[in-house]
Length: 62
Image 1 (cartoon, rainbow, N blue to C red):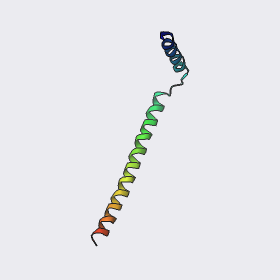
Image 2: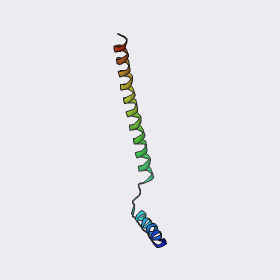
Image 3: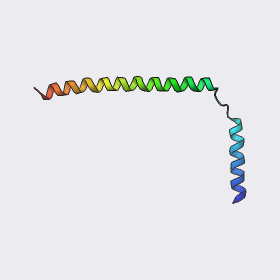
Image 4: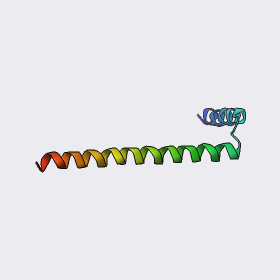
């Protein structure tokens, strides 16, 4: 059992050495892009919700 655990961690370490990690600047750019897109989608959905809310109130108050 101990051999299997040690083997697992060795194989995991070997696989991690094969990974090509992105550069710091690429990671920062991608993170910023995700944040900007998330904020844009949130603003769009918020605007749609606001407009539909106004429309629904107008229908109810008739």
